[in-house]
Image 1 (cartoon, helix red, strand yellow):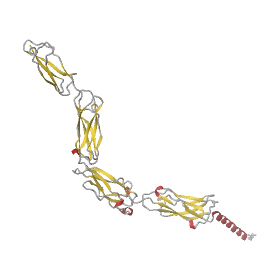
Image 2 (cartoon, helix red, strand yellow; image 1 turned 180 degrees about the vertical axis):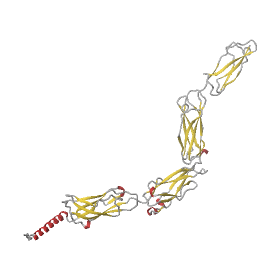
Image 3 (cartoon, rainbow, N blue to C red; image 1 turned 90 degrees about the vertical axis):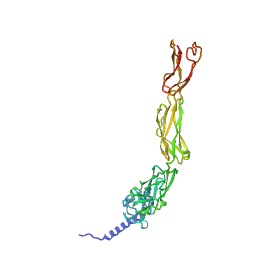
Length: 454
């Protein structure tokens, strides 16, 4: 027995009403469309900050269930090269009105590529909610921070006529697609020399390439010469760098220091003191009495001769001095140690070397420490038999007190004289005599002979 289908139309009507009710509820709840907008539209490449899209229910109602919104990404920016990949879908969670899609991992690269775009386009919603066709796309722009340019670590340097060099490091502001050649168009060939151009490869764009310029020697006292070295138009298969001109590359200024000036050091001879120290001042001067053309730098050291460093003076090693530009000389001070010891005069030397901007004609300054501690002398007595006939020599000895050797020749006068004695000149001994004597340097005594009558 079959059932009657007389209720089928009623059921169909009920299904339509239920579907209509649900659709109306969803339409009312979601205001019939989903839109997208940009929260952070402009992203600076060097900041690596995220840009943001906002996908939202236009009416402002909140979702009764999770809503999945699918989207596609287009634009001139490349996923993973310029920014982190996006998943392609986002969920507006239950109870929320929107979802934020962050564009992370903005890459700060070294290439000139212009501003790039990231475009999000909504293409489906589940459960179904219409997409607002007037607001279904949004765009983020990544601003490129790279440009063509050439930098130099410094534009001034110093060389010397003795072949001294100076270095300039050239770098690029972005990584080129091909080598960049920079002409070096002008040198003063009497003062400096260097390569005709400089080539920077793409791999060296940020580490740089060094331009080395060398000073040229001459025999002319011409002072320090400034060489203005011009750079030319860069060339490259990279159109960004090929479009640069010579005004985009700084010119260089190199000063070649003249080494044909001449300097010398003088001697210093002075007495030591008895207590403390004495300063010996040596003068280093420009030969001929002229003034220095530019600073003249030099090194100096002390060297023992007969004086001993530490006992007689304070040694100096690896010191430096300067005759300033426009001045004729400078001084070197050496400390001499005082004493009260009787000793010979003692010598040390001050040696100057490594002059910059001058030649050295006399590198050797003599320091002579004159002894100020004098010897004392005395004469002894003589007692001996006179003899019966003829004469007998009475030998008197003049000697240094203490018995040490004379530090130098010691000269003295002597004479015999009538005094409160019982001997008579001409009868008991030779007539009154006078003369000079000397204790030679290095000896301790000398004799005086008086003839006594037997």
